Length: 296
Ligand SMILES: [Zn+2]
Image (cartoon, rainbow, N blue to C red; front, side, top):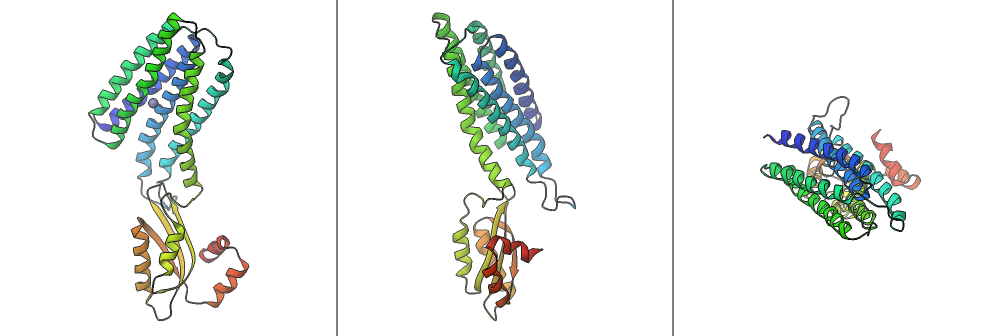
């Protein structure tokens, strides 16, 4: 089976099963099953949007999107984490009060659904494990991880066979929701930072500025901007004044090298020879406003 067909299968398995869980979660009155439904819906969306938007993000830049389509690959992550965060927040709000006022659940139904879920996850994991790509490896591991959640559902349903500790069901739903949030919140945060043009993780702007300032060819650094397209492809623009009698090409080459050492390969360098103009601007404008002035 080809990689994309396997992803399709994983997508439909998760989506179909999320719907089944949603219906039976209500029928069995089980919050834990509903929490797993949210989780599997998130999985389906993550797989579906990754498969679709990844391909789209490799499109070459054109007249409409001159920077290319790389950020489209982030859209899926944004939508998926938004749904996961709202879904699990809903579970938290619904089920914290339920801890003190638990309702009976259909634990035999939960047991059967749990067994079915484990069979489906094992099958999916097995089909995908035969693949080679990184995505497939992550996905295969993920399905095994999901089995742990279902083992907990089965454990709760067995305990409820012998006791009436119905608080275990909302408690498990809270644990599952917490687990979802612990993954979705950092994911949402790092994606949001990319959209907000934050300096990419792992890049030390202060250090970069120092390295450029210390070049023999550079007199002064006016402005450095570093941003990332998708967390992997970083861009930079820098505005400097070289020392007198320095060749522009020579100066630029040294600067490019510094950025390339940090895996920043798309660098726009503006060279400015006149001193007086900038000294005047730097006094009257904050640095961020300075940038747009020089480029437009
Ligand atoms: Zn999952």
